[in-house]
Length: 344
Image (tube, rainbow, N blue to C red; front, side):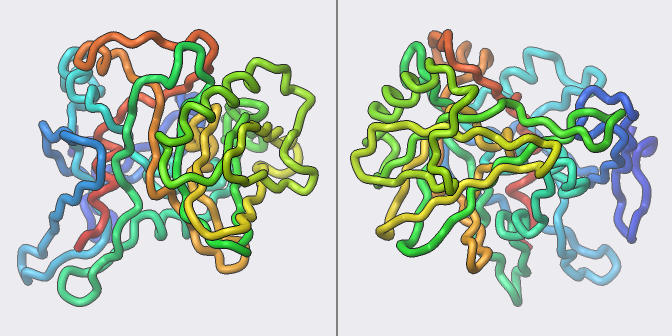
């Protein structure tokens, strides 16, 4: 299999895989992907948190340490019966979710125009490179985030995160439409027409999760198709003890392929954000400082809702009837490979 799909490209042994124009995932349709071929198995994150796996490649003839990103697949493949379904489910049943590389385009950092034009600098900030001996890499922002049971039976909350922000700064929160129609290159769509959010000041998610659930779930029951309750200038309301959710109505993709709102904290500190949909569905899991361009990732985050595989290991949980959850399958290979990029 490896010989059929790999080649020496730029001195590196790479997988080169051209997707058909009618490939089922429109993001990848017609695209050519490149990946390293390296494998491992049976690694499961025991607890949510930050894990570091240090590995490196050396030149066989000189002993020099190679720099760059490479992939180690952890967990069984879904391709061509490499692993039975029961084995896949067991490997994918860990109670965590990768905070980055949410789709194949972001993972391979190619064809970024298909993600509404997200800038490549985001990935450099998320997964910085370095050298063991001369230039140690800064801490990676790719971490495992908790995936827990829903907050309530009818909850509309799918994700929550804590951002550390500074007073007097303006932060851009951008939601991007994805490439959806291979036969119409200019056709982009959002997974949803808009999204309810709940934002408040808090040092922890648990301390405000009940208030967020009550407010956001009640708001999601209303007809928001004609609403845009975020301020006319696009500024999200931030205040301590907030009880009000706001709706972001996404722009028509005939124009821009993204929608941006602004966070302007009056005081420095931690901001808790709860969302109706998972921000990675819109490449909206980070903020950008408008003036400096600094990319701000959550210091803590939680996914709500567990997979069928997790239920079998963690006990049964009732799935909400009103939440429109669009969960990612836990692709362990994508998640862990994101950790491994250049701790060299």
